[in-house]
Length: 60
Image (cartoon, rainbow, N blue to C red; front, side, top):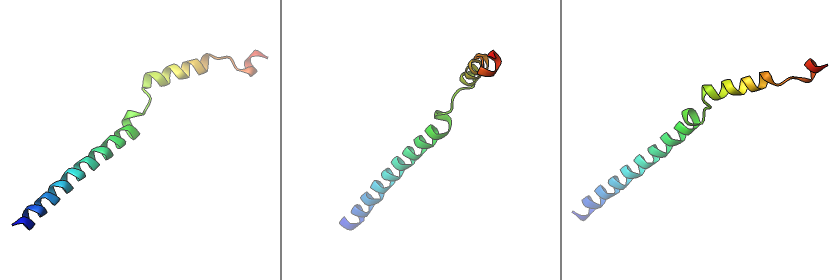
């Protein structure tokens, strides 16, 4: 009887640890993909600033 309840507790702890591990993996995946990508508006503003800056060739 004691062996059976101990075995159930082991499985419960394993399940909790597995869920936590999946949560960490999902968070890391989100940060690596959607979370850290720059917005399209930011890219457009950056391109406009780069295009508006005169280059050394055009001033000569």
